[in-house]
Image 1 (cartoon, rainbow, N blue to C red):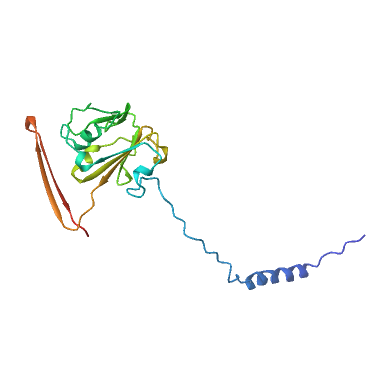
Image 2 (spheres, rainbow, N blue to C red):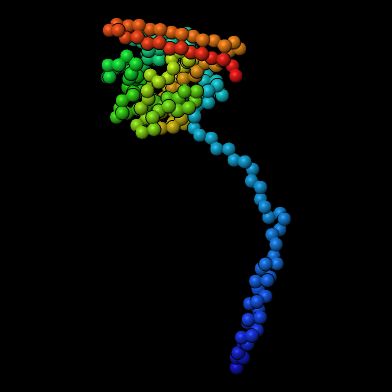
Length: 200
């Protein structure tokens, strides 16, 4: 069987028409697909979203009336009243307590294993490097209540073996308010704070 050679001119003619056919194709009007918006949420405690009594964890709430200063610290004094919570002070500073929850620490010292996630209005405040917590940076006079969920509560992220602690700050009322507070102690120590609030 003899094979006839394919004329080169025919191949050239076909190759000239192929690009024209490709250019003549237009996209269909329905080729654009619209995707519904996707909401991405980070893990956080939503302050007030769900009553703490309805969570599946053992929980306790400390109100503002229970925030009595102990050694100059309202936060330390309030948490010390909870079962299984104890205070230590490795730095000697009246505002840098180590809070132990069943032996697990909430500490400002880098290197101390942290086992409690701490939030302010649902936003995590554990440091990113070693998850240490500086409770002295939380304005004590602005706290409305403290919510403590005993662990383990892994849904709130790492370092939640002993539980999660959420500080809920006060909301502004109908009238503008200004509050001032002064504290004094031995060895010439003292502290003061001013809190102002107004509804915007």
